Amino acid sequence: RKKYARLPPGPAPLPLIGNFLDFPRTHVGREFAEMTKKYGDVVYLSMLGQDTIVLGSLEAARDLLDKRSANYSDRPTSVMVQLVGYDWFLVLMNYGQRWREHRRAVHPLMTPDIVPQYQAFQLDAARSLLRLVLQNPQDLGSHIKLYTTIAAIMMGATYGIEIREPHDKYYHMIERMGGVGEEIMIPGRFLVEAFPILRYLPSWFPGGGFKKWAADAKRDISSIVNHLFEDSKLVVRTDASRRPMIHCILDDSPSQGNTELEMMCKEVAATMYVAGADTSHATIGAFFLAMALYPEAQKKAQQELDTVVGAERLPDFSDWPSLPYVTATVKELLRWHPASHTGAPHRSIADDQYNGYLIPGGSTVLVNIWAILHDPEQYPQPDDFNPDRFLGSTGNLDVHGCDPADVVFGFGRRVCPGRHFAESTLFILVASVLSAFEIGPPVDEDGAPLPFKREATDHLIVSYVYLEATTVGLATRKFISIR
Ligand code: HEM
Image (cartoon, rainbow, N blue to C red):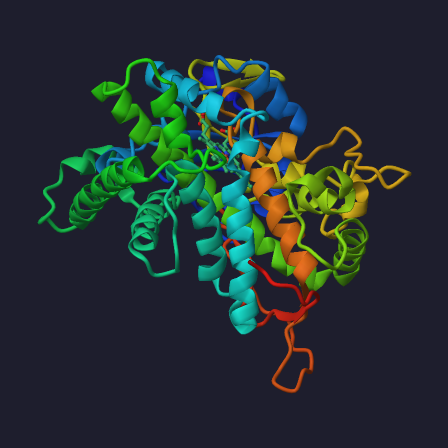
C-alpha cells in the first residue's frame, strides 16, 4: 500500500473495474488532455487492474520514452494478437531478440537514401487517384478510393504487386488483414484481454465465440501473408526503378533460399504493408476535409504549384525542394490530424520513479500525441489548419524547432521507421491533387453549399476524419492528360 501511495494522480477508481469508465469514448486526445489539465503531465488510470500511465506533455514523453528507452520500449501483451496469429506484426511485438531482428531487417529499407527508390510506386498511385477522381468526382469522399490509393502504394512498394481496382483479389485480402488488425485493437472489444483466463473457454461455450472468430481470422491471415509473399516472388523484375522492399531483403541477403530468412521476409513485408496503410490513409482522408474547410490554405498551395510546376504538367518528386508551402501543408496535416492520438502503447519493464511518482513495472504507457500537437504555446490557435506556421520570413520551410513529424511518429526505440516514406507519400498525393483539382465545400445539385458532414473515429487507435462521401466538390484546374 505504501508503494502504491506514490502513484501519479488520476481520477478516482471504482471497485474492480478501476477507471474503465474514465477511458475516452469519443475523442481520445481531447479527453485525455482534459485529464492532464486536472491532474498534471503524468496521469494514472487502473484499467480493469492494468496500471496505465498517460503522458500529456512532450517533456514527459522525451524524459521517459526517449531518455529511459531501455525501460519503456516494450509493448503490452495481447491475448488476441496471439490468438489471431498477428504475432509477426512488429508494431505489437514485445521488446526482445525477435523485435531486434525484425527492426534490423526494416532499417535498411527505410533510410532517407533508400526511400526515393519507391517513388515510382507513389507517383503511379497519385496519378491513378487523379484519374479516379476525374472519372467520378462525386465519389471522391468514398473511403474506398483513398484506401485503394494508399493500398496501391503500399502493395507496390512492399511486394511489387499492382492493385488495379478496388475490387481485385488483393484488395479483398488486405481489407481482411486490416479489418482483423483494427478489430483486435479496439480498447475493450474483447473481454479476454482483461481476463486472460477466458482464453481457455471452449469456442462452443457461451461467451467463447471470440475463439471461433480468432481461429477463422488466424487461418485467413496466415494464408494471405503466404499468398502475397509467393505472388511477390513471381513479379517480373524488368524495371530497376521499381524495386519493392521484399526484393531488397531477399536479394541483399547472403543466405538466399534459407527458410528462416524467407519467414522473416514474409513477416517484415506484411508488417510494412499493415503499419503503413491505415496511418497514411487516415492522414490523406483528413487532407480533403482540411482543404474544404480552409480554402485560403488551399489557394496558397495552388498558387505555389502554378508558379513552380506550371500548367503544362503535373508535379513530381523533383519539384519537392521548390514547394515549401506544399511541404508545410503536409507538416500541418500531420499536426492537425495525427493519425493516432496516442500512437502505439509502450510498456514499462521495471518500476521507475518520475517527478516523485512511481511508474510501476508492467504499466501500459500512452503518450497524448494529439495534445502535444495541439499545445497552444507551440502552435497558436491549434485547431486551425494553418501551414503558414511552418514558414520562415522569406517563405522558406521553417518548423521553428517544432516539427510535428518529431512527435506524430512516436518515441524512443519504437519510433516509426516509415516516417520518410510516409512524408513522401503524403507530399506527392497532396501536390498532385491540389495541382489538378479544387476541393470545395459540399454542394447540392444546383451548386448551393451544403452544411459539412464530418465523420470521425477519434476514439479508435487509428483515427479517421472524413467529409461524408459524395460531399466534396471538385473542379478540374488542369486540362492535361493524366497518364
Ligand atoms: C502518416 C503515416 C504514419 C504515422 C502517423 C505513423 C505513426 C507511427 C507511430 C505513432 C508508431 C508507434 C511509435 C511508438 O511506439 O512510439 C509507428 C510505428 C511503426 N510504423 Fe508508422 N506511421 C506512419 C506510416 C508508416 C509507414 C508508411 C510505415 C512503413 C512503410 C510504418 C511502419 C511502422 C512500423 C514498422 C512501426 C513499428 C515500430 C516498432 O514497434 O518498433 N509507418 N508508426
